[in-house]
Amino acid sequence: MKLGIGSDHAGFAYKGKLIALLRKKGYEVVDFGTDSPASVDYPDIAHPLAKAVENGTVDAGIALCGTGNGMALTLNKHQGIRAGLAWNSEIARLVKAHNNANVLVMPARFISYAMATRIVNTWLTTAFEGARHERRISKIPCA
Ligand code: RB5
Image (cartoon, rainbow, N blue to C red; front, side, top):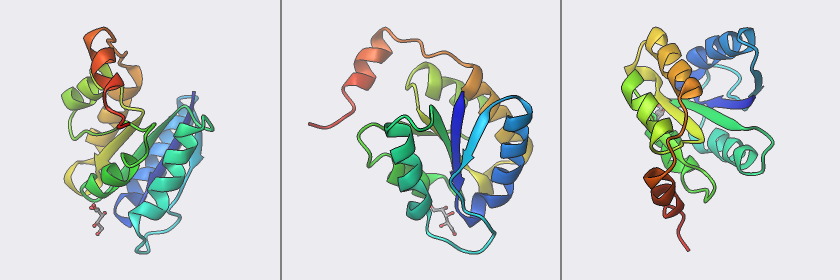
């Protein structure tokens, strides 16, 4: 599975550690930046990541910013993106099982790195339940 990952400066440290962890687990990971802890604007990272998920360059994405909201708001402007914010393992499970989020978003300033790893592992290993949830997510894109 090929994952895209991106963050602004607030998520930069977690992103680097997550990339190393995911590669160690055997995932192919494409880094969409940012490349330093210097201040950047999250849409400059989020839009290229969203396009890569939409066009299949990567299978799914992970995004981090301080609250997660800037990334989620930007990613969800793309019709093919279901970016879901998760700050604990149960929400990570539900955002895949019920919402089939194709981008996982985390609030780096409000969770520990250990929690971030639990969230990522849960989201990656949970299956979408389909059925009524398939009907619901099919109604998300606007005409
Ligand atoms: C950066 O200071 C912060 O605004 C950003 O990481 C994010 O939380 C925005 O939604």
